[in-house]
Length: 191
Image 1 (tube, rainbow, N blue to C red):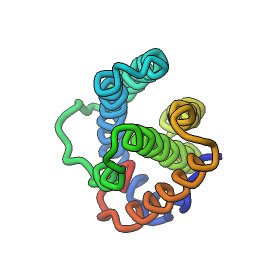
Image 2: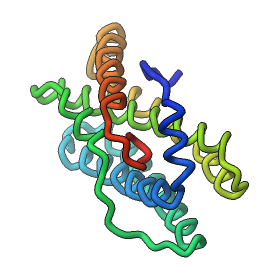
Image 3: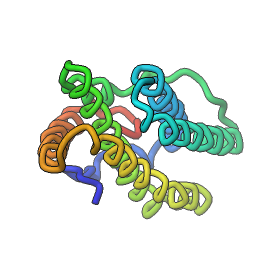
């Protein structure tokens, strides 16, 4: 369902579980970036009317998640602050084609894959966290992450035929697997 070409490793899970404060901080940054990306697409492709309302709704929901994660951080005595990002998203997006519509399709697919990886990792956290409150938080976000994954693929669909979308998703998913495998061993949601 999530169209990922690889699974997260136990090494990633071990790093994440050993430093949940950093994972939560990075998670807040990821939600903020996801909202920003949706808004950026609205501005960049404002002549594509079909994108406007779904991306606006998605940005609002990402900001709600951002606020929830910050609330959890504060409950743990932490504050939102700067954090060096993982190179994951930049490396993934670097594979996008350059012609306008092809770039839109690829960007939407890459966003779908980022949401899929988030969903996969949040599920691992939900299943392995000893803190019941954190496990509950991650369980509560799974449906949204999966829905966002599908939303981005649905938004890409009108711009190409079904088979081309499937093939391009496979290509970008294989690229995503290489990016995640080559990521530095940072404590981040996407490394």
